[in-house]
Image 1 (cartoon, helix red, strand yellow):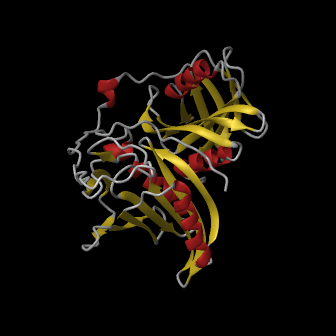
Image 2 (cartoon, one colour):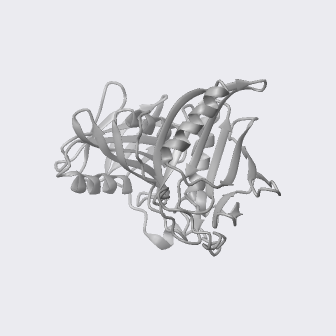
Image 3 (spheres, helix red, strand yellow):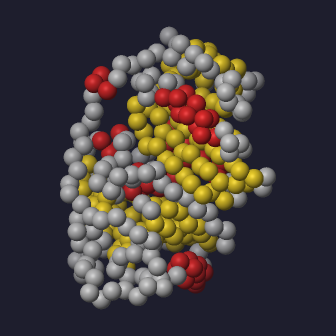
Length: 362
C-alpha cells in the first residue's frame, strides 16, 4: 500500500485554531474523559453517548443537503504495530465487500493517524466511509468513523477536520511504541484540559485595513472583478481567465483562479479540490501545514495548505490557498522545486496572501 506522511498545522494543546469556525459563538464542547481530550463543535450537531462504552455518535448537518453525515467516536485499546491496524482494516472491509479507495498515514498533534477510506452501498444508497485511528501512547486511543453520501462527503470531511483543529488534550501525546509493554500502574488518561473561551477579535483593534495598490481587472461569470495585490507583484490575465502573478525574487509564477460562490463551488470545496489535485503530484509528503480561515490585512479571509515532499524528479513544495471576500474568492496555486530558496519564497507567498483581496467592480 502506498503511504503518505502528513502533519497538521501546529496547534497549541490548550488553544483553539485561529479560525472563524473556532471563534464562532455558536459552539458546544465535547469531552472524552477516557481519552483526556476535548473539542469544540457546532451546536447544530446531534450528539449522543453510548452509556456502556462512552463512545459517541454524532449526526452532522451538511450545508445544502437534506441528509446528515454520521460521525462515530470510539475509545479503544490498541498497542500493536501500525501495519497490523491497517491490515485489519483492509481485511474487515474486504470481508464486507467494500471498495478500498485508499489507505495512508497522517500526523496529528505529534502522533501518527492511520487512515482508511472506502466506498460501499447499502439499502440507503451509496456511501463513503473514512476511518482514522490516533496512534498515541495512551491506554485507549481515539478512533473515528465518518460516513456520508458521495455528494456530501467533501463537505463532511472539511467540517470534521475543522473540528479536529480544536482538539486539546490534558497532556502532550507521544507516538505509540508497541515494543514497550503497558504499565499496569499507569494512571488513567482522564485529565481533561481546562475550558477555553475565545471571543471573536475586533478587526479594527488588530490592524487597519490596507487596500492593495495593484488592481488587475477581469470578468467572472459576466461580472467585472478586480484582483488587488501588493505593489511589488505583477499579474497577467491568461486566455482561460486565470491570472499569473510574478515577483522578481520568485523563481516560479503563481496561478490564480477567480470564482464566485453564487455559481461555482463553495470556497471550502474549491480549496479541497485544488489541494487534492496537488497531492496527486507528490510521491511522498513529509510535512503538511494548514492555516484555517483568518482575516488578512486587506480585509479578506485566507485559508492555505502547504506541503513539503518529493515527486519523481526530487524536492517539491506547494501551497494551495483561497482568498475570500463576500461572494467572490480566488484560488492560489504555488509550486517550487528549489529547497535552497523555499524559505524566502514561502515568506513572499505568505506576504502575498496577507495583502490580497478580490472585489466586484460596480
